[in-house]
Length: 214
Image 1 (tube, rainbow, N blue to C red):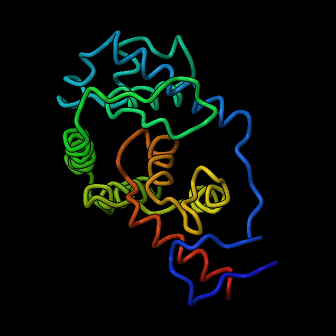
Image 2 (spheres, helix red, strand yellow; image 1 turned 90 degrees about the vertical axis):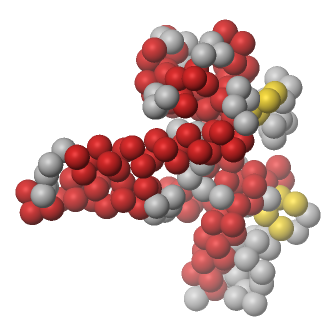
């Protein structure tokens, strides 16, 4: 197996390192999210007001009974796309690209407000650190990181970054397309919140390459 070279730039695509393809289930979920997002944008334009006023993606899904249409994860992703827009990134998605109900800046600011509110809610419950279970301490730690605009990587997410790096649609010549990878992770793993940025993806990708080269 060819190993990563530590002298490579952080977003150079390694050759022969990973073998992965989108599963049929993943492609179906992405396609359904994009199509449903277009419908939601037209049918329920008030979701932009809801999101800006504190509704989470899941709460919006429940308010408009979107669970009746598909799974919760697909419905959340569809709401996010209705708010943020779909840029036509995937060849297997049949709908055209469309703008969101909110501008990019408006969506990002609202997402940050949601993360800060989640962290504050946990703190306002009045539990001391000594009175918390191990799981509660872990959750509080993660919420604190979220409030600062970051989130620790789970193993599944790191594997997905490696897998996506081999997909032509997530490449730009000899480099990864960090923007598309970050958009995909935010849509599929983070409920549409702007958790990952292209810069973060490049840094993590470089770390993964270094690990393979050790």
